[in-house]
Length: 114
Picture 1 (cartoon, rainbow, N blue to C red):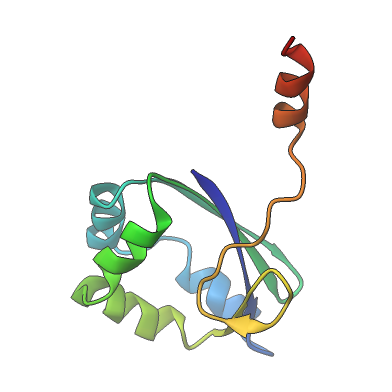
Picture 2: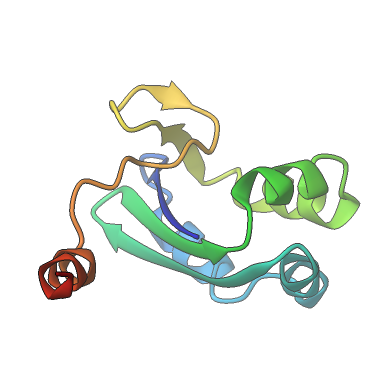
């Protein structure tokens, strides 16, 4: 499954966020792999962050990280620079996926079907 997330960097924290997020802790990257995360990319536009996550099951990932001490330490560190996560309607929320509206490969695949 692929899903997108939207978060925002705190005012004045862009450079700190970028320098701290060059790498995540190796133990956290290993934990992501164990939980079925295959890839996670983050793009920045101004203070907005857009995440694309490729994983087996997002709900299982969230459950697996709920009490994980490595993730908790990372969230405490990087969370200093992140203002908020937003849902598909732009409202503050937890890490709620954005709604996928359109995808080229899906459209092209649908056109190939009889």
